[in-house]
Length: 249
Image (cartoon, rainbow, N blue to C red):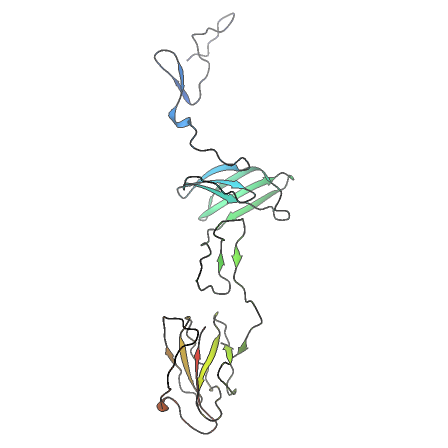
């Protein structure tokens, strides 16, 4: 290879520059193996960056593709109009464990993204309020679990209780508790709030006279459990008082 130039036309036997290739003994120019096309990315994707052993490209809409596992199409939605396509990726690199991306859209605006990595939604899974998940097919949005209705009554001391009453702890822990059994002529809540078990299907017994509550842990969630008979020794049996057995959903 030489960049020297003699007078007149350049010699066919010289080479000014060569990128990603090599010259064989016979003088032929051949592409280096590293420049061979491995896959063709969707036409609307922009950019390519390595992150945690994967190669990420970016699109403004979900792309259903048959890419190899090491390729991931991350969705970057325009904040005000999700239909606006990406124009180019100005910057993409790992920052504090996640990808930080500066993306320009075709309307000229540049937006910055920090792509957290969440678990995909899973069927038959308990989610607490505030938990966030991605859909099984990522669409550029994360979804946060919120309360579907109004809060239930907060536990309070000395309140009359009946089967099927629903209460929540005074300090919310993500669970509600349903009264599944009572005893006594006029059962009321005790003077001390129970130690609420934060486990689906668990049970807790409350005593009216203020004795400590007892937790019965169950790993099986039964929507209509057979709690059997409650031994007389569990409760004081005083007139106007009684015990209550709460169960989480």
